[in-house]
Length: 215
Image (tube, rainbow, N blue to C red; front, side, top):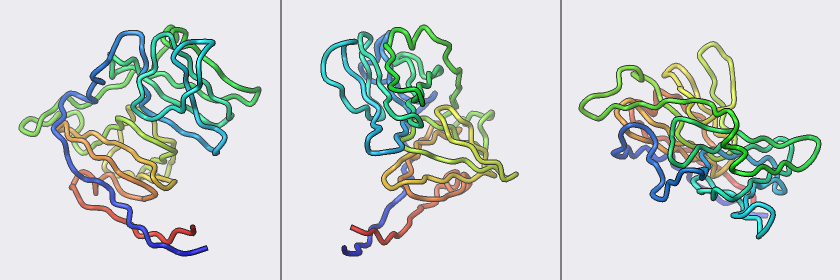
């Protein structure tokens, strides 16, 4: 066993993005894009296959576009995936694991269900969206992220959540990420594990953390 020092940087580079998350280049009606993913154990990777009932299962990654003919599988109770219609950033579906066994759902059936509606800033650098002043909106995440309010309440962060500047974010595990959109349309991606305030991102501060990792 040997200690090695690693430096994990929270990327605070603001990109030119307007009107919410960018649609995938191959966004097609009937497909799903993964925008949030949590897997609790090494055996619990959420997976999909391109055609329901046949073909190999593929481990899902954030940003993957899951075909219209495909299906999604979750085999650990506390795992979950959030996916939006690839041609619509303002709706999202959540599929969770089950204590009773493996969950398998066809993309077509997921899209027939009731989606959660979300909204994103539509501002620009010259004209920020006033509705999102001093706020950040979650556009995607990998792993479990916790938002702690000024009142001490804590909740799991999900796609489309609005985080106010009085709150704090905790990224629990190594190499997990969260991407946040501000009122000007700029995005910031933060790499964990890390605790940080929403205010630190809004003021564009560089964040970093040193870890001693056993390997």
